[in-house]
Image (cartoon, rainbow, N blue to C red; front, side, top):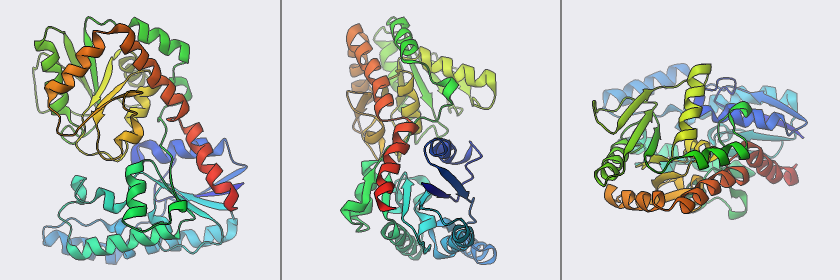
Length: 379
């Protein structure tokens, strides 16, 4: 198959969109006869986009240019000529938006983490939009989803939005979770994970938090869980990566800062922290998927999170971690973790199951194979 990867993101830059396009393209290259990257595509016309953005800012309202017709039409226009020259068998985009105004001569698929409706009033950047902007963004999203031969989403949460809100045909909507954004040399073997799990002492509980948004990702809740466990006589540390908490000098807190995967020593430190941790504790308030949950599973680290948004498609409750209601009290979360830590065999079984979940569901090789299997009959 000759596949065109049509993207508003640069897949050569591992920092863009959490590295998802980068790892997606790398897995695709290993599994298709030919892969042509079309992009990164421009988002919006220069003059019109600046005027609209300024108008909204003067009103004190955010403006999402990519979710407007002025934003998506230049994407389609930029992709049209290279696609005509390439003549691919199929098109795949890591976003719904490039397909909104694209007239293609071959099957098309989007593989996204969310819809506009799923993020509206859910993510901070999608609040306080003008009513006209919201209406237009819905129109753009609806057109993109309905144009796709296959509308693939990383979570059941997003897929329900595509079918239920935007009216996509049920047979065209699919759920394929994303994989862990890890280089091959950073993925421990199954034997190494088994040894790491066995080496984790139950005397001290090591919680890990990896995220750039302390509040949205539930850092304050994770810290209160650590406090609860410590108050019950279970020594506990919460190690924070990716952000600086608005708390200093806390006895249960260890702040590592931002660890760059591009720096060998920092990448090795990140890997070591995963290996040593008992749980990835991320009681998120909003999340479309959460690549970090897949990464934790690769190391046999169960995730502790909220049953909200796309998280249940990234964390299998009782299989690769434990999920709670988003309003659950830290004490109840601590109760469950204390019970697991007091049952060595139960904890080790859950940790081993998390690794199995990674191998079966949460790696890019498996994910890409599933998407290609959806596309193949359409070509």
